[in-house]
Length: 305
Image (cartoon, rainbow, N blue to C red; front, side, top):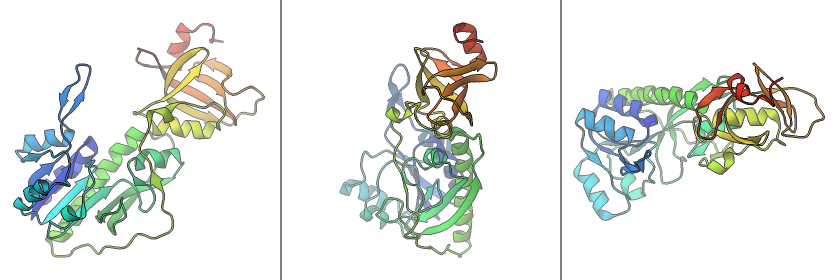
């Protein structure tokens, strides 16, 4: 089976490996190289690096709207296109080229969390479970019928990065299962998404990382988890700007103003919130590395008990 794979970030790499194991990946589409790092040199995407290592031809068009892009794809004669976190919208004329259409691996249980940041939004919202859907793509944003899905529970302390890694592997497994059925002549049956329960996972914005101490501690703790490792929650505390990597909510009753330090010790720094308190366990000073609250207090004797 001739497969064209389209993906860009690390999340898509296990799916590319699964597609290679189940079929003939004749080409990989990925985003153009981008400036990155301190030197701002051009950096290839993780999917491109994996493709090159496997000797698969790589295509990096800036858009798929041009006739030249369609001609290039037709020339590959794909039977199926697999799309995983590619980063470009696929026009209908592109979707129509592969004989079996285009499949997408999406990191949520659709129709919940359509869009760009389903993993982080699920944690931020306090969802108890999430999962992966294998979807037959249509021209809408994650609106196509679902071919297969699998759920998993979100851990109480799980960060966005940890859940990302688990869903990446789960997505590869679901894709592998779907491709296996297809090769056996048992094409998965596409089920339309229900009209109820639709939510959108808007792209993360660094401005969202700013902590508002007037919010409930439970919501802030979820934000800290969801935004780790990017963009990482930020806060002003005791006259200093800090990045918060790890924190838990405490069901404390207090009369202090939001943002007030209630206690500080080896277990963390307890900060008054609109409801309850946030215990900061791991943090980062400007220009520094992530450290425990206990190490931070060694340098901030004014906060230490």
